[in-house]
Image (cartoon, rainbow, N blue to C red; front, side, top):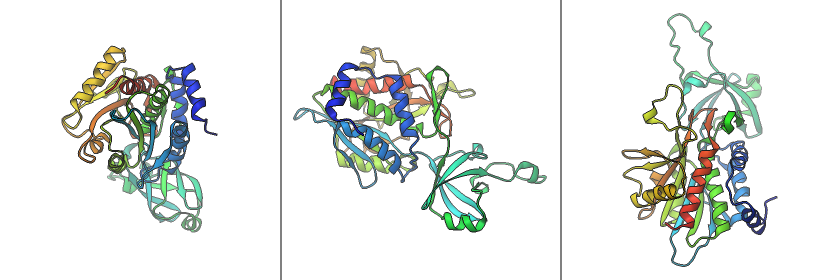
Length: 358
């Protein structure tokens, strides 16, 4: 049962620290809710329960979640904190002799998909399946062994007759994997892009609701980022803030990854620089991080950021927008990996931006 706002405030006065333990628990909870782009209902329900103690939660026609967590003083700036709820997934295109043909929802590299367990969300319920393909032993000499989505199927285990009754084109498919704890406190699993950004926004919102700074603060957990950012774009029109901070993930370091294109996990949040991002707000975040000894990494981009920041920046007459990204390893796989310390520091920086003025 959701706690009342007064009970939450007492807890925050006792313990004002954003902890890695709390970050990890919230991430597990959100990541276990299947929510591919356009079908975010399960994650929306989980996030709504987590956010409702802080204010009234509303839902836009395209499925983004909005909540004003601090009314602020009259005439003070209005700050929006945003991350996206949706995740990559698949959609069934055809039922074929007990197997399912499918297409991807969002950007997915087909090379790692064979033998991946999935869940088919059908009208009559959820069913397990596994992605399969023709074994290389049976492909024949001279066959093209490259992995392509159109050559993959989902094995449901059902007969052709039963599968035809249970499944239909348009059914959504998600990964069956759950978050796993790695060494050094790191967390791995599907949907951390961008549920971990949502967790950072929620943690900052809790701090802000307890402190009650002068500025008005609204939270948006948006839909459809993986297929174009429509949720953030329309949500930005609905809120029309003075400033926005978008939180997403970006490429973390890993074996064989070019260091100039990645950032170390545990090295701090990544501050974005782009012609589309507001220089003054970005500079303010950089200065706050320096003053409060929050580790910061830098991510310059020559144009579009590939995040909801692009859509927020052009909402209405334009919104002054900054971008914070959490380093994430193995992006758009079932083993996306983050360091909770980076999430803590991202949340701290957003809370400070609200508390100390933007």
